[in-house]
Length: 397
Image (cartoon, rainbow, N blue to C red):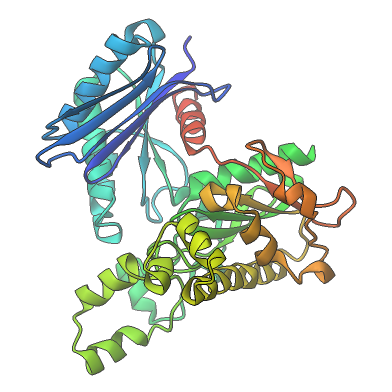
């Protein structure tokens, strides 16, 4: 029986896919269709025949997935010869209804549709990917894997906001958390790297990419996370503000006559590093900082200060800590961020070895001294593999 899973991540104008061996994590092929619905689209496929790229109009997600199927047949590997076990779909928001991956059926689609108000930019695109895949692969089992599911283990005192109870009871206002697939994968890999059972390990995971989030994972279960009702809360991000005074929108409405839509767009798309420097790519922020740009220097300090605050807070939540783990683009590649974010935490047993931290590597590794009380780790995330593993766990039940 095949262990390969076709992982699909459908965005509003893009569709990413990977053919993954759920047992080994080996990627047989992957690809991307972008600018769907625009006058000119782009499709990339990386398979056994190497990388191919085509530029063409891609009117719909169905056209994108049909193009991917054709690329598999033309450039390998053949889907017919691979005998796919299932299709796994990334779904951003599962609300409080989904605490685990779930088989796709009409009821699931209806429930995810009901959750669209909680993720209006993401869930509709995820649903379109599911509908298209069901039409094109009618005989394959399909599974939804939710970004929010890993954080459904948060205790009530961690996910409850101190707002009128009717808001949560009637409208679902609470902390959900995101990047759960990444936090789940990385916390498991941290335990493996330490040679211990995940049920014995307490870990702080720092997922630092264009979107950033932190989590406190106790014995394999998320007990606190930085993102909230939406992905806006928490750490400073590429274009998102992270934590701000909740009175700021009301102030801007009164003083600048801004609409809530304008404020929402600004906090999500024009804040964070972009708001502070004009650049959301962290590599460019580092370049500007190195050239002496004062705004970039301040942005770097704000970014790392926020991370350090969360590490200290989550250490308190966990009470005992075995490891701090950096992952995702910035976390995996920026030694400067890792060093600055944990600077001054030696009294907590958190120490970075400078040589290990600055050594170039793409492998999971320890960057703290071997005898330090708390291990500091860098672990490349692999959300596609995690989605494939969770998908296969559902179809093999």
